[in-house]
Length: 220
Image (cartoon, rainbow, N blue to C red; front, side, top):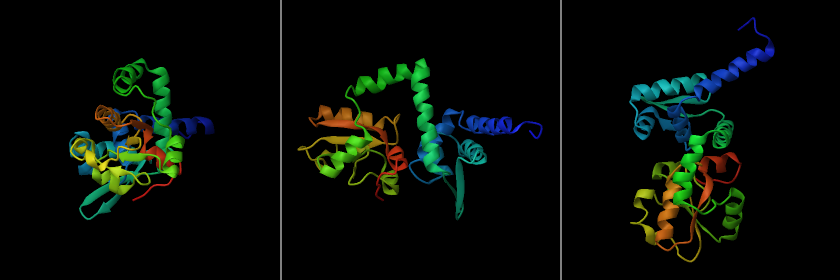
């Protein structure tokens, strides 16, 4: 690389980063790390990989300085390095994919728009409603993700427990559901289920990581 010019050296390094995120499992790992710190074992269980494979993917992300480890006793915990920038990178990748890749448009149309024909609520709109106290914010992620951080005043009911704990939700104001990000299906399924049960329900346009990366208030 020493024979390359300055621009070519920078582009070569950027290509290394692009290669690091160029795998579906690593993108999914980054989505989980955007919710908060995770152990290798926990990530493996959530994604459905072996611990060895998960560790290998994490090492690639570590070399690209997208994730960093921390030892906790016998466990190795990982978190995002440069969280705001990584989340922005994933969001930009998603926008390009939605514009350029036909398969993504097929999935968006056949799954997301079929199950949730209503326009998602923007962060700005939800923020105004939170300030006006005119909305119920519903976090449908698992409880451990909610504990690491969530939107102000949010109620946590994981999707699997939604119908069982439906009495926790007031019926006199709209419900806005959110989860891990723009392609997380939990909020789509939650909003659809709530409308079938008679609620005025919609979903947030993206998720907790994007809210936090935008510098908006979060609670733990």
